[in-house]
Amino acid sequence: MIQLESVSKVYRTGDAEVRALDNVDLTIDAGELVAIMGPSGSGKSTMMNILGCLDAPTSGRYLLDGIDVSGLDDDQLADIRGRKIGFVFQSYNLLSRTSAVVNVELPLLYARARSRRKLASAALREVGLSDRAHHLPNELSGGQQQRVAIARALVTEPAMLLADEPTGNLDSVTSGEIAQMLVKLSEAGRTVVLITHEAEIAAYAQRVIHLRDGRVVSDPNRPADSAPLAEVGE
Amino acid sequence: MNVGEAFKVAVRGLRANRLRSVLTMLGIMIGVAAVILLVALGNGTSARMNAQITSLGTNLIGVLQSRGSVAASGKSQPLTDKDVKALQQDGEAPRLLSVTPVKQASAVLNYQNALWRTSVFGSTQDYLAAFHRRMVAGSFFGDSDVRTSNRVVVLGDKPVQRLFGGHGAAALGQTIRIGRQSFQIVGVLDANGLNDDVAVMPISATRNYLVGGGDAVDQIVVEATSQATVPPAMDKVTRVLLDRHRVTNPSQKDFEVHSNLELLQQYTQLTDVFTLFLVAIAAISLLVGGIGVMNIMLVTVTERTREIGIRKAVGARRKAILKQFLIEAIVLAGIGGLVGVVVGVGLSLLGASVGASFGQFAPPELSTGSVVLAFTVSLCIGLFFGAYPANRAARMRPIDALRYE
Image 1 (cartoon, each protein chain N blue to C red):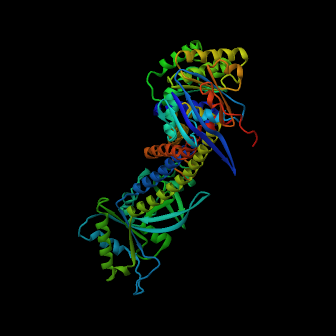
Image 2: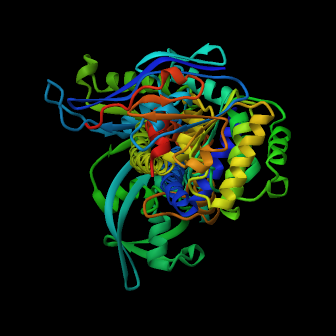
Image 3: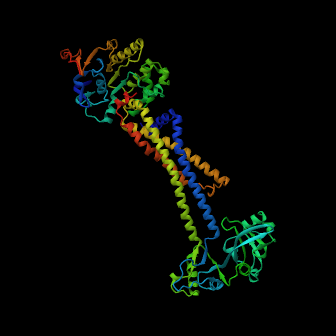
């Protein structure tokens, strides 16, 4: 279970203060497929950084799988990322010059797991890429690379799969396939958080949360909370 | 991630930029090879010098008339045959193997149309043994030649080269002019690398035909029974001569007593400084190589910012990133060092096997210590100069690193 309790993130650039996230409350249950949508500048990326434990909130509490991660230091956050979160990025972020299976092994390497090759092969089988295990990323298509990235995200059995614009670089057919795969994973019991600005991709999710100016403006689970449109402008 | 895995990752990183890695290694390689080769050259030169001095005999004691300061009495007596006799006849311990007078002169040797100026040593039949010399042709002059001022001469290697084209046998029995007199060549000395430009004749002949001058001698060479008895023998020589010259205050003595051992120690000191100097120069090139490692590692870290971001995103701690880049730097410097060891050792052995002399240097003599030291230093350079870039990588924030294009 993932819980954000009045989480805010404030950036200071010179004198200006930017509230990238403003008192966000959010609960995501295990096995849910949630899409987070919003225009650029809505706080989507900040949301993704905080959910992914890449950045710490300025205030508020973040409970991931029952662990309060708000006050952890860099190394503890690294451990949480390694064990609890699987990342899928828009640009795949695979290590070039490294074969698919070694890319999938990477999180296990830092988690000091045993029988890494076996687990990595199993994860590749799950995304249907067993026959491409020893190919380098540049020998794979975009869709295949993203599937390798999904296998890498799955290999540690994380509490949450965090996909940041996973179809942003793909054509519509491949995008559909990747979205289907995420749906299947959530049906198999994985929590998937999908950050996107494409409505047709978000449509695959059971629950779509809209962000605007750092606030949740619509969330089907909390209709009462649907705030009025925030004031526009700087 | 354990060290073995970090090592594999490091090697993969280095192989990705092969040319760059090789060029950086080259810097370290040259430094390490230079240290090994220069130390070997220094050792070789030092060893040759030691061998030369040792070949003269470490049990030798030389007595000279004082130069410079003169005793307060104003009297400075020359060393004479009487001093030699007193030393030979003194019965007190320790025993002296031999006491040999030497009278020095400079003269022109003339054979047919060839002329050669050389040092002439007038001495006794003990000269050969006292100076640890050997004959390559003929024989040394004997006691009767000394008593009768026979005009015979034994030539060193250099005059034989110059006057007889290096054929000792051809020189034997020939008559050459020394000064205004004819001398017969009875023998040729072997070359020892230090005292080859000489002609040795009976001391009486030197006095009669070249320099004249009573019973004075320029130097007395005393042989102690062994290296260990050199100090007591020096004391004895000093005591006997103080007594004979009637000097009561030892600080006012009019002669100087030296041992070859002292000379050896002075030379050893000299060559040590010389070797240290060479190593310092080589160390500078090693330092420059280290700066090259740091430079390349900084470039590598910047280039691989995104990789660092990915690794951090999937759970790499700071220490894991630090280790990865540190090991990469150490491997870079270590391989450079290893190749440097191979090149340095190879060149040293090659130089030693062909007996090459580089200018004033003797053939190199490899020392294991310098090889181990140079290689260890190359690893330390990797550690030292890799630390800053690796730390920079380790401290990157994952969100910034992931966003880096």
